[in-house]
Amino acid sequence: MSEHKLLLLSKYAQEYQRLIAAAGLPGLELVVASSPGEARAQAADCDLVFGEPVLIREVLPRLPRLRWVQVTWAGVEPLLGPEARRDYLLTNARGVFGDLMSEYVFAYLLLHERRILARYLAQQDHRWDATETGVLRGKRIGLLGVGSIGAVLAHTAKHFKMSVYGYTRGSEGCPDVDAYYHGAALLAFAFGLDYLVSLLPGTPETHHLVNASLLGALPARAVFVSVGRGSVVDEDALAEALRTGRLAGAVLDVFEQEPLPPEHIFWSTPNLLISSHTAAPSFPEDVTGLFIENYRLFLEGQALKYRVDFERGY
Image (tube, rainbow, N blue to C red; front, side, top):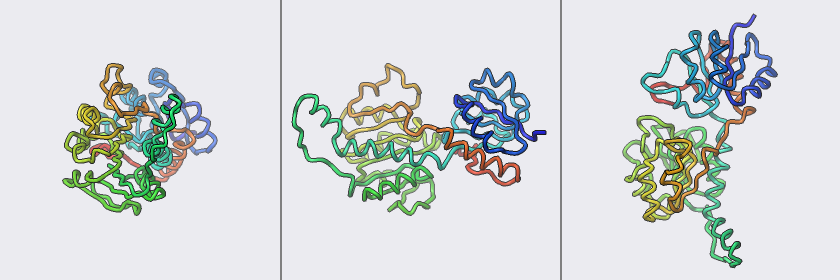
């Protein structure tokens, strides 16, 4: 007889079901749903949930036996807020997105340094463009947030012989960061950077942390990359910095409102590249291992990995 009943609520629910079933986890019955409507009809007695937080949010009031939710994203904002339910364990996905995010960030850094778009446009015009290329070697990259993803980016930056600077709440655990900054030292952190990468979660403390003041502290040559949460960025301030040439460029994967509305100013902002929240997708084969590991810890009564603090928001 099953001790626990797991609701798999995801657009990839069938794939998660296959992977979890193959693991042969003891005492676990699976309920599979690809939408909140489908889940409501069959999940009232589930005590565990695994899936996307934006879907899970819709069914939380219908789960009286809930004990633990494992989400497939790093971000958990849909499950937070002053009115959000907090009487369960919440764990997020960490340690699986670093390589994907590193590929994304450095693809755009290399695109910028190597002038790939400019050379492609020259090719279309049948025009020889022998303009000297830039290189990443010796450039300064600043990481807003140095968690598991930031640590991978820092390591990749060292491969390219870059200088790495980190701004964190207080941690200094990544050996690939050359210098750390905290608290009021935000503008000092920004000084002299060639690239600023935001990896921060969306919390009240990080709301619009990337504002006119921070952008103004960056050199005009700097490029800003946003892959954490859209709420960290003051979008009007960023658009103004790009329009006036105060900033060389920006690459945005995340936004305050998604999908980005057709009338949004970013669609026509110069020197801005948009990637529509595709930087680091949650692949089932990557994320399932986190659930399996945590489920075994859950059965043993041990602390789960990557537990979210509802107060801090991460």
